[in-house]
Image 1 (cartoon, one colour):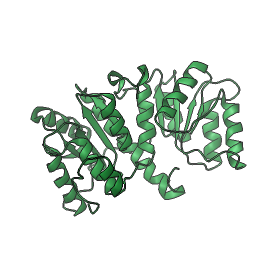
Image 2 (cartoon, chains in turn purple, orange):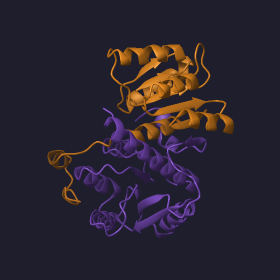
Image 3 (cartoon, chains in turn brown, red):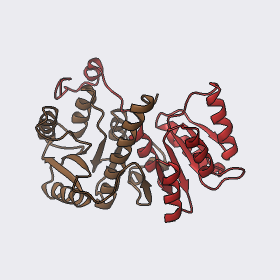
Length: 170
Length: 143
């Protein structure tokens, strides 16, 4: 992931895009379920608040281990299955890439948005190989994050629809 | 995936970026070229695309016309429309014609990569790949 087009500073969602897969009608139904893992309490609260403002229901964890516990709770139907995961890369206990690796090992293809203050090539390459949908560099603009999560959420629904009709893309 | 963009430089940039992310890309310089590729797909000469990226304004035939043709033919492949003229009317029109997403130019290439990854299947791992990665898996495959 070298070169000017993929440098860390450019790994940000862009505002001027519009997806059509999502239903943005006013409704009491949540837009979707997000699991968040971030060890910085202040940033965690800010992300929670921003996503909840948009209409997502957010369950959050302060480290990778707590995120795995949330995922296990979701697998046991104790909390709703997440539509999108948002994770910091560097966290105590298991980091975001460990959790992502565990997800893929479990054949769970929920879309994942990563945030990192250290967007070096090695991290970005690992994130890509494990199927992270996008990696946002910190400091993360909350508008960018909400847009990224919304688009990833909408497109994941589109992906599911497609699979149900024509099978998975090759 | 298939890309139609009449700006040579941008077309190369889009193709390079997506190829760098691991996708196989074929390109056309206008809508007619895209229709020719789609004909080749229906004849089985090209693999079926799982994503199509098209500019709106192109010589011969624009992206919106190709999009309509695709949907008329009941091809539900996701279509990303890219445009430098993305007013609300165009966004609405694209949505009505069945576009998956509209990206207004200039957009960051990473946004397109993000869209492609969001629509692609996530790579799944096997146990031995985890072991080979040298990191202990936090939990097994039963979650």
